Length: 422
Image (cartoon, rainbow, N blue to C red; front, side):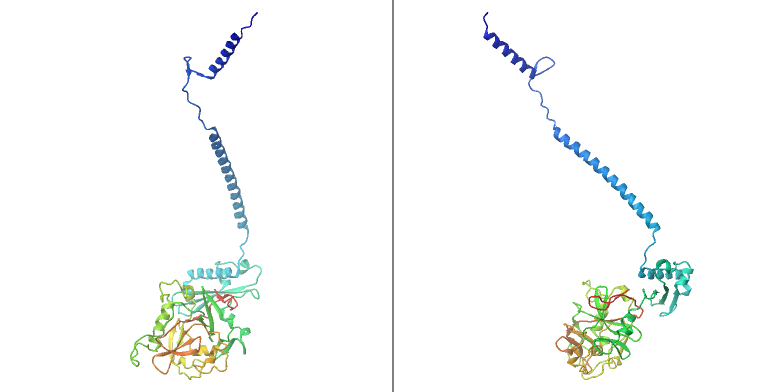
């Protein structure tokens, strides 16, 4: 039997053709579809979107769980706080006493002091009895304390001053008592001296710094009635001005007139006090809270001769401008601050020695020269006290007085830790 290889080849070709036809797409009519659309679905993107949705769901669940846990924690904190007693500082208790007294006088206005300067004392026991506050032992269980609130009538309102006494632990104390306590008075070396009935700081290195807001002052005097004289420590940048610049008939030009009452320096000090000396500058000498604590004083403006040998302000106080809130130092104030025994005359250059009032800039005194109508005294870093035409320029170094009832808050009077008030 012969084998026909051609027949076998035909059969193999038929099989391959059949397989090719099976791969082709056939329409319902049995025809081969050659223009069909390819499936372009991006399954990877769908998968990524599905994963993102699942991640969002998981984050949402975690946030809900975290919120629930935080809510539970805050709830427990609230519950605990309701049963825990607040811890009070001494300052807190003084504020409680003050607020309680104010509530007391809302109901008993007739008991308020009537005349300016009059005072009323309200014991804490009365405030407790009237249920305006709790007993002091509630606020300070570890201390045995007593207290009172003094109310003083001022020009415009009432000043409420709480006094808390907890023995050795704490006592409310006025600044002047802190500064001029018996332990602080010296009779030699640098420090605070009892001089002419006042307490005066003398020497080069003394702890007499006071900070009011952002501004640094120095105590130059504590008066016999407890008011505290402060002089500005540094220069005020825009205050280099003339003492006076008016026309002077004796010299026939604008050299100035050395009468403080009508002077430019008095006008400029008042502008400085009211924050209007340079209205474009944001500097403020004193805020409203500090101004309430100032005492009015008589400014000594008597003129002084070059060879005047007094240093007790007797010459300067021969003429006064009463009821002032701001001023300048007198020559006697400067002389008293020096410990040099050769500081005996107005123009003694040795007054610069051992004197904390010295600076590296020139500044005006309130004191004018008795020799003429156009010169006043100023301090210069080179020579100390000098006479200058009032039309010359020097810085203002203002003086103020704190009331004797201003409370001490903290500090040691050093440059690093100045005294601060409440």
